Length: 230
Ligand SMILES: [Zn+2]
Ligand SMILES: [Zn+2]
Image (cartoon, rainbow, N blue to C red; front, side, top):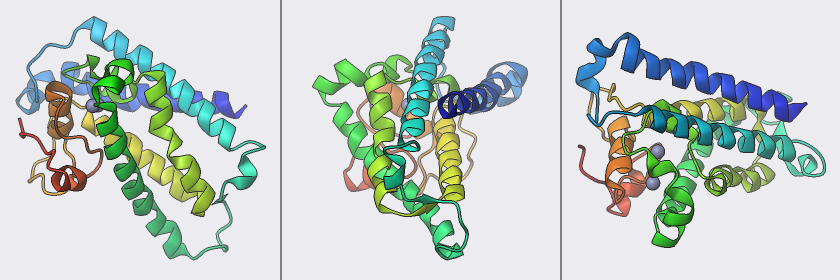
């Protein structure tokens, strides 16, 4: 059954990659990575349990969403294709960054809307229970926010033809970017010219009123919502 397979896959990936990153940075190689830690606030066992509980609910909702749209009666309207000769190879490649840019734009405006007092208290506060986030917080959303996080892709997949491997590649980039944002450690050297960093999102969890972006800094810069680096 598609729902079960999707849920198992996403849950295993969450614990292996997210959990692995958490254990390496916070336990196994703690001394080595200490200097890269963004916030000193200790992470409690209660915070970890809350992050994991809401993340598992979100992953179940994501699985239900995708198993629904990839099954009748919705699937005939979805333009995801598996054949290699329908559209040229360049389209399969370029559709991945297009999805990332669309996702980044949708996320920025949805996220800013969720910070309106009315929506924040009802839905987004769950994600901000972690003021010093860990990779386990990557999917720690209120169920309504979990639905909002994924609903944007339905009209996109009904309008734009996407090769299934392009969609899988995008999903993996999105997952890794999400883990990076909640790492709690800044591992990227270089300047933060275009890309959202772990520090950016960690500061968003602590300060609430800046750094709403997901992949890039464009929207935060255009709308003057880029916050302090630390
Ligand atoms: Zn937020
Ligand atoms: Zn977050």
